[in-house]
Image (cartoon, rainbow, N blue to C red):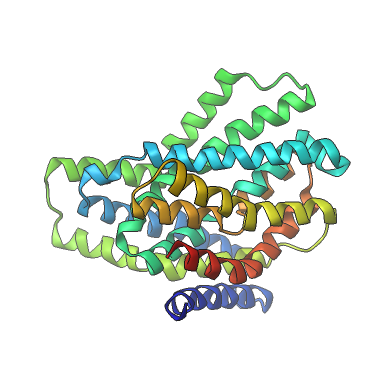
Length: 311
């Protein structure tokens, strides 16, 4: 447990530093957007590209990992569907916004740094593979759910698939994974100058991502329906990790690195994309804003326990 806390405490201290910098106006909102863009477009892609160059491609097969993780997502969404039938406040957009918040973790800004710090370099590729389809799948199925519930007739599957495909083609994470795969298979080396540049960017990813997460938290407030908020926090921080623990180990029997990453990602605090989805449909915006704000400090209590149970 001491080793776990040694890895986790710096994570939350960096997040707190970012939060304090935003609250004290040391870094403006525009500055925070710039740091976030640096992480998304440069630092994390460089880390993923560098890792893809060094791995045995046989270890990168994502099918079992995706099947296990998104089976867990499906279980959580089914729980939200039942909740939405019993609690009026959860029915907004059919419960789709609440479902997204209950299963969409902050994989980019927190998942990859914690994976690398605690599990080592071998965990980076499973983490990147989860992130590569995390947002597109949530947006696709969340939109289908919401539009079906609202009877707007805009949930044309072909159009949605086209939008998702275009989004994935432009995603720096997917581009980095794909380019790293091609370069790995080609057998070409990197020029020392280019290799050093990628190393500098990749090494900056952990600190920049966690600091950016702290900056983003400063823009959220605590409000909204208490029952919906409580349900999101329980599902995201407790139920989802428990379900994923059973699926990753007992049902799909994933390799150790994939097990660790799948369980860790299920226990991450609520991601920002859930708030964007909620505002699009004006559904449980206050509760989801509060869930993003509260799930980070609460995960400081739950994540060490999850990591300890992973072993």
